[in-house]
Image (cartoon, rainbow, N blue to C red; front, side, top):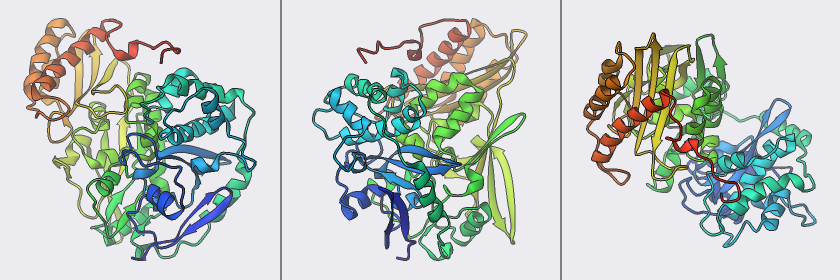
Length: 492
C-alpha cells in the first residue's frame, strides 16, 4: 500500500495520518484510529445520520461548513479540510456549544445514540445561518435535519432546539486562524500523485492524464454509493481516483441558454442552481436523500452511477440535459457531448470508454411557456428511495403541446425517456382528452418489475396517476400534493 499522508485541521491543529488504506472510511479512522467514539455507527450506509460530522472548506475569505455522513466518506477525501466531531464543540472549561445546550434545554435527547449526529447537524446549521444572523425557521430546520433519524424523543423538541440556538450566548469559530491553517495545507507539497493508490488531482488535465494511466481505478466523487459497496459488499479497490478536488469540475457556469454544472459540484449546490432557475423544484430537491448526503454526493456521480432509481436523471432527461465526456488521447484533451439518456447502455452500464470521465452536465434554462414538474413516490416522504420518479416538461403554445419531454425512473434497467408518451402529447391540445389518452400510453410504455419498494402493477398505475396530477395542477387545482400541506410547528 502506497498512500498519501492525510492532513486536516481539527481543534485548531493540523492532524497528519499516514498509511491509511484508500478504502478506509472517515468513520473507521475517527473511531478506531483517533478514538473519537462520540461519532456513532448506526446504519453504516448514510441513512440514519448517527455518524454526522462537519467539514469546513475555504471559500474566499470565509469557511463553508457541510454536515456529512462519515460512514460513507472516504478518509482521504477530507485531506486539506477542517473537521469537527461532537467532541470538539464544548469549550475547554466544559461550557456547552449552543447546539448542545439547546438540545439539553429542549429535552431533545432520550436514548442518546443518535444525539451526536443531530448535534453536529445543528452545529452546521449554526455556522451557516445563526452566525450570519439568519433566522432558523421551522421549515429550514426540518429540511436540514432530514438526514438525521430519531425514534425515541421525536422531532418536535429537536426542532425546538434548532430554533433555540440563536437565543443562547454566541460562540464563534476563529475563521481567520482556520483559513491560515487551510492555506498552509493547500501549499503543502503532495508528492507525485500518480504513484499513490489514492489519486486526487486538482486540475482537469491531471485528472484526464490519471484516468488514461489508471483505467481500472475506481472513480469516486461524493462516495455516497461507492461507500455502500465498501461497507455492505466489502469491496476493496487497489486504486481510487477522486474527482472532487478538480477545480474546473467544481464550478457552476451560467450561460444565456443553459447552466453547465461540473461533475464534482455537490448535489446541494447543483440543486440550488437548478432551483434558482426553476423554483418549483425546491420540494423535490429537499427530498433527494438528506442534507448530509447532498453535501457529499455530486450530481456527476449520481448521473455516472446510472442507477435506475437515481432521482436526478429523470429530471435531467425531462429538462433536455446533455453530458460532456472528456479524455486525454495522444497528449491532447478531447471531448464529446450526448443527451444524458444516451449515456446508459444497460443496468449500471454506460458508454464511457475506459479513459473517459464525465466532466459536465449541461441543463437548458427555463423558457416562456414551459410547464414542468417532478414527482417522487416513496414509502417515506423524506430520506427514502423512489419506487417511481416521473419528470415532465411541456412547452405550451396557443393551448397546444408544442413539445413534450418526459423522464422516468424506477420502471426500467436505466433511467429512461418516455418517447411514446411524448409523441402522444406533442401537437395535441392540452386538455383532459389528450391527457387521458397519454395516461394509457404511459402505462403501456414500460414493463417495470416488482421489488421490495413496489409491485409492477402499482408502478404502472402510479405512472398514469402522476400524469393526471400534472394535468390537474396545470389547471390550478390545489391540495393534491403533499407539498401543499404544512404541519403545525407545535406538532411537528
